[in-house]
Amino acid sequence: MNTIWLLTGSQHLYGDEALQEVAAHSEEVGRYLNGALTSGVRILVKPVCTTREQIEQICMEATTDDQCVGVMAWMHTFSPAKMWINGLKVLGKPLLHFHTQFNDKIPFDTIDMDFMNLNQSAHGGREFGYICTYLGIERKVVVGHWKDHGVLSELDIWIRACIGRASMKKVRVARFGDNMRSVAVTEGNKVMAESDLNIVVDGYGIGDVLTFKPEIHSAEVQALVQEYHKNYDCASITSEQSISVEEAAAIEIAIERFLTKGNYQAFTTTFEDLHGFHQLPGLGVQRLMEKGYGFAAEGDWKTAALLYVVKNMSVGLEGGTSFMEDYTYHFTENDDEDVVLGAHMLEICPSIAAEKPSLQVHPLGIGGKEDPARLVFNGTVGPALNISLVELRGRYRLVVNKVESVVVPEMPHLPVARVLWKPEPSLKESAKAWIKAGGSHHTVYTQAIGKDHIVDLSEVMGLELIVID
Image (cartoon, rainbow, N blue to C red; front, side):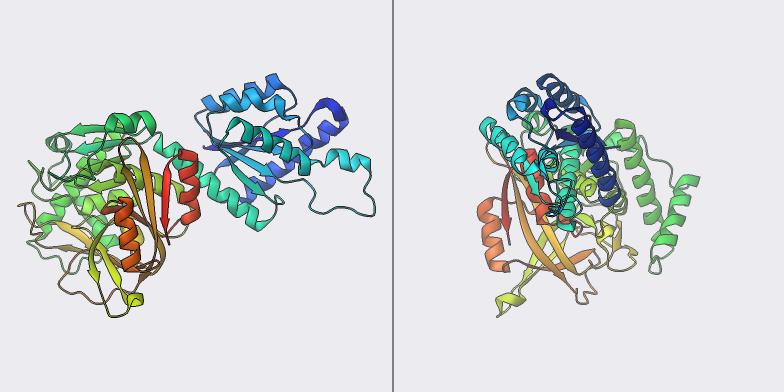
């Protein structure tokens, strides 16, 4: 289980009895946060930090602990900040300065010096803030009482960003084939990606997947086909098309087996490299995304890794997340009514579906293969983000556009999953800004997390960020 370590600062100046109260307060805050936060991360309360040596040791342990995704520091009393220098310098996990205090209100009728000495977060936190700024320590600062709903929301957002950072540092992408020939944005320096972001990208021929592919008449294929019939509207599937559905099931099994055996969390395909496959993987890719795998088409390993990260960040939240592409525009006389049709050839995750998906088989018109199976549906209306991760001459940039998904009109001749959205502040301004920022035509589309999650992710990852809203 992922953990966040709560480090509470104090000093021996106040005596053992005061330190015991500080420890008890820390435990109570930790218990409350574990019950109130939604991210599923466990808050671990560490012993009260009172010496240089102890602080340095705890920070080193946090850095090397694989389950620790971040550290929250709370100065319960005045904790002289020179004690924190070596610890902060060795800390290799995201840091949040939790500027809170145990009590919410001042007990004006009874307050005395004992209360004042014990409740010194107001200036103890400023001392800690100074040393962080002096050392150039990047951190999130959250201010307010630990039971305040706004404070809890800020903590949840930051913790989910820490989950995203940890996911990025563990993601391994299997790239089946190369990228779409002559495309620029799906290329990139994979050595730099592994060095700077810990993204591992391994290349394979699509034929490597075939060794895991069962016969289409096998029991496991037929069981998966029955699952399709249970979960999706299959009324349009003819007896002739059932072979295509069985082939899609065999492909899904093969890809998932390959990813499981190789410990891959994300993958890419390309329609220009399908040697040995009878159809472009569509249905299986959609379902694997719904299970939490990252994916992007045409060899786009950066978007595949980012999709896995965002899906992990959004666990437990309402709304889906999918691979996406701005496909075509709808221009009107009124800028407020201009919209974008988002889709891809086949590979849109059903987690964003507004209704029960329909399983269909149709010609693709690209790739020169047999008619592929796919899930067809309209996206859910409501606020969303389009997010792009691009490499720009030795650095990385996240580009984010806030959008509002709207009702999709009838499109009887377009049998693909699709979304229709209004970009903020308008299609013209958002597209102009996106293009000048160098954003990709592939994106991660999410209705589960908001702009603040990506702001915090960019900060804990040390990435450039451009927000278009």
